[in-house]
Length: 258
Image: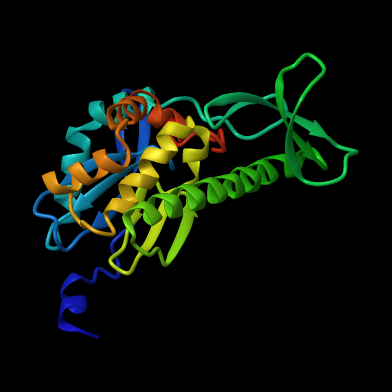
């Protein structure tokens, strides 16, 4: 085992702690980071959990004190998260920014597809028994996201004359997209829920990182040239981005009350 691994290893350290505030118990996940210089708290909107990042030599005692000191902040931020919306029959879910109502067609063949009903409303049809609805809707949306993001990314890459090694779609919680120095792009599948101009902006953004692995003025000029409607997309994400993380989440509570 390397010296660094021995230095940071905490074999008996718990992975989480609890914060008590206003007659409620809030689980807090602990995370050590070798580049951290202080204790920080953040809310993982996708998982609806609190994450406390500790410096390499930070103590569990200090972490508990820091988390408890910010109990009010934790409670307020979790309360502000939109209510979880598991995929189920009757739920209205956005697809490319347009509302679709999930309809479970138990006797139908296939998995999931979209159509217009007799009233002219958009519906997302799901075959099979009710317990399969959540997974089939999730799989459908991820396939649609893969297709749209692959198409958009490769179109923008062609305009810049740069190669893309691969496009991945994942359930990223901390960012909408990322780019590696090997030419691999990764995106959150939840972008398929947003209007197309948002997805296209993120695709252009990450493609520009193939030339500029930074957020310098030069990078932003390149993005603006490739996708001029930056501000509209960023404004939409600022207002509605957090809401996208609630879809497909279990409704189980992460807070215990006395």
